[in-house]
Length: 208
Image 1 (tube, rainbow, N blue to C red):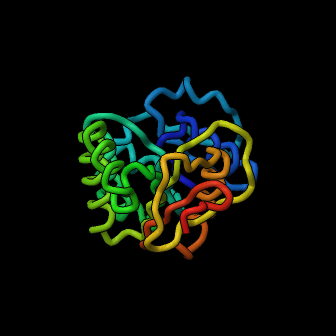
Image 2: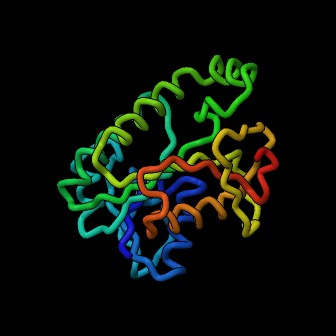
Image 3: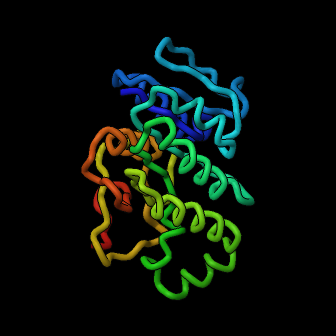
């Protein structure tokens, strides 16, 4: 498949690029600073531009089968980028969109105290993420939102646990970025999580 990727120079995004190429996919990465993506591969195409710019997103989506976003940011980056995806993807004939989010934004899975504390510390980020996710959910795109637990830079554990309906997050939950990257690629190339939000952590969650 041909995958478009936003956030390719981030910790998880780089691993998505590497793993997608290693498994035979073609990747188009939209990056603000191309010099930061040093990987060279004939199946990797780099497009310079802002993820919040619909025209740049359109260029990255040219010929793509699916889009993966591992974007992070401050201010209104996530909501603006998501709106750019929602605007550009249908025009490019792309419907499959997989977006990486964080367990910290899945508020209903936390106990009241943790919900309060994280809300106070991350109010503006929660507002931005929530606006972006609402735009995606309200669109006609074939979306998946992936809520990953705390990320580690260690080697892949090879095991990913999906939290069941009604289970709780713990701030101690962890998952390797490499496992998240593999899961994102799998989700983008499979219809199994179509128009669903999925919560993942490493190994057995312990919260089911």
